[in-house]
Image (cartoon, rainbow, N blue to C red):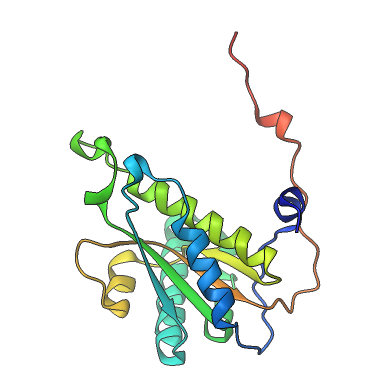
Length: 190
């Protein structure tokens, strides 16, 4: 698939067919994540592949609680209606967790130290693009309390859960939402 076609056609899906994702595709998606850029090539990520239904149910329950807390804090009523049930049905989730000690030099500056999370975000994007190129769909999911997700997944204390990448074969017929023209969001300095 052409690179530009992958970029333009990729969309988030929250409805998935009841079909397993092939091991070969999962491996290719993990490799794509691992090929992401990172400060000083420190590769601060850890990928946790989740297929277990009970674990996915615990994540769904956490997301439902977090949704309510964040809706109250933000006043965003739409958030109360955001459906998290698909978290149980999605065939595969991959948690991308980062190790702040494996970030760039910014970790030595008080109040800084976010480069590890930026690198993990690049890994998430690589994974979503690879999934689309392989005929899968996915969604970047962050509606969770990090400490509780870390506990559910048994993460060592140094790891910070950055995102869940939900992957499967889409069962969502809706089209990709339109994007604003990039020129509306660009400034050139003289």
